[in-house]
Image 1 (cartoon, rainbow, N blue to C red):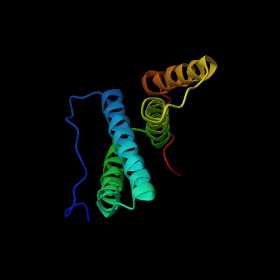
Image 2 (cartoon, rainbow, N blue to C red):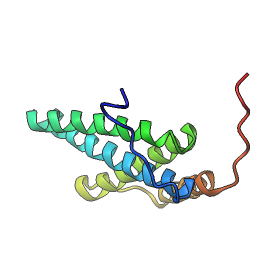
Image 3 (cartoon, rainbow, N blue to C red):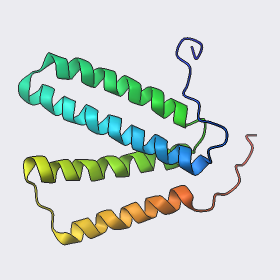
Length: 130
């Protein structure tokens, strides 16, 4: 099947943390876009939002599968989810007027710092399968 729709390939000269970070940003952006389109479909009944949103999630799956050739599943997934949550918090704040207390923004900053460590920190060696 990868002959019909080949996985995305990163240049070999790019370090894994760069590829992983780009994948996380792309995944979060696609997921965020899909979430907004889903909300539009739910609230407005827009068939266009439904079709574009479904396509967005198909592209998300393709980018996700491609990213797993370069980075660990847990790291990519955690980074994607953290970035998605921050994006949703910002959309809630700017578009829908939801105010968060300062303590919650501190928690967001701590989670982001932990994610940076997960992506850029030292890795252990993989255990070969038995």
